[in-house]
Structures are given as C-alpha cells and as structure tokens.
Length: 306
Image (cartoon, rainbow, N blue to C red):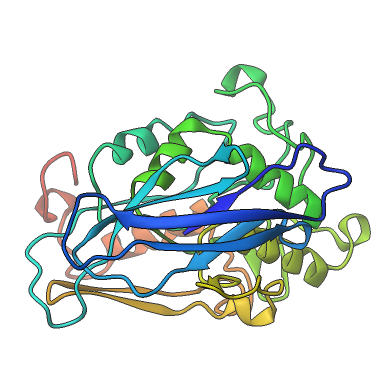
C-alpha cells in the first residue's frame, strides 16, 4: 500500500510520523486487522510504501493512512488466488501514454467504478515535456503543468509526479484497486535506451546517467512498486539502487492467467530503433508486391480492417 503526505512546512520538515491500518471490508471470521507505524521522510519525498503481511487471498480489504488529524482516502484491494487455485474471472484495465496537457484522465474515473482486480499502466505514466508542448495552446486540454519546463533533475521529476497525483480521476483509480506498472520512455525522456535518449542533450542537460537515476528514483517513490517498500513493522528503505531497473516480473492469477512484465527500455534496448513512417510504408509496399502475395481485397478481416 502506498501514500504520500504533504507537510505544511515543506522547508523545515525532515520526517513525519505516519500510521496505517488494513481491515476486511466486510466482517469475516478469522480475518485480522493489520496496523503499523512508520516515518515519511524527506529522503523519499514523503512517500511511503508498506508490504503488509499476512493477508488472505480472496478477501476484499480496505486500507487507510493517517498522520495526526489528517486521514487519507480509503483504498481497497483483493489478493488473487495463488497458482493452481480455481479462478473463473479476472477484471482488469490497462492504460498508457498519459500526457497531462493532451487530455483529461476520464478513463481512470470510468475504470475506478468497475471493481477491478487490478489495473496496469504500460508506460508513459508521466511525460517529461514542459508547457510548450503542445506548441499550439488551442490543442491543449489543460492550461498548465508543473514544473512548466522539461524535467531533468530529481526535484523536477518529483514535482511532475506530484502534479499528476492531484488529478482526482487518478486518485479514484489508485484507491479502487492494486496497480502493476512498467515504464516506457517518457518516465525518463523521449526515445530512451540503455546509454542515452533522443531527447537528451548532454551539453545542456548534463550527464544522462544522473538524469536516468533521478527519474527512476522518483518513479519508485511515487508509484506503489515493491522497490523501497517497507515490511510491516520495518524501517524505511533506502533510495532505489541501479537494481531498480531489473523489473522482469511474473504474476499468477490462480489457474486462469499468468502475467509477465518485461523491461525493454533501460536494460533491454542497446540503441534506439530508427523506424520512420517512410520505412514502414516502404516495407508494406514490398510485402504487397511480393510474388504470390494476395491482393488487398483478399486480406483477412472486414472491409474496415483491410
């Protein structure tokens, strides 16, 4: 479970006490409540994650954080059955490419009403671009973003995630079900690969490794990944290391489904693929013109699909 607390005195606060509790959403015999305390520290931008145990699969739980008189929104989740156990249905939603200025997040709100088992974000949870994109203000669905410049430093990335988290539709989705996430490129910068990015200029934006590390640290702070999570009753974890890039994961949902999450950017891509629209059209023309290739009106699918 994850939350972020915003201190009233941001300049002077270094640590704030935080309490958490988890309880079954409906009364169930033999299902215990869990509680704990931990500090929210400046070193993790006052975000906290708790890896709470023991929990029972198949039980719908509620959870909430508090600090003094302040209480978070109540969230809910339900753990799936382990591999091999019977499961007849799985409800989930997936999202990607969430650009603040290009549109609102109404899809998040809609999904929050569906009582999902989980939701996936497949990359570009944030965008690094500043307020000059889109360049035509008439095309922007929202007037501003914070910070208004392209983000490069750790403080920049933290501010951008904090800005996104003010969105009420994202808040509703985050409270409604667990999330599974994987970055694409814009969590760092456009067209990122192992050793650089198309949208990184070292002469103006500094060392790429420093920027990548800052982006990853903010990502793991502001999303409920397991990197940096605190075992129930444990102390706050250190900032994520380079190993935070290693994120190939497997999720089993009873005997119904297995989900594999792969990292194909920061360690899985030795160079950025150059594949332009012209190259795509040329390749399609070659396929269509190849000996024995069926005419377009004989391709599979409906007229619209062809």
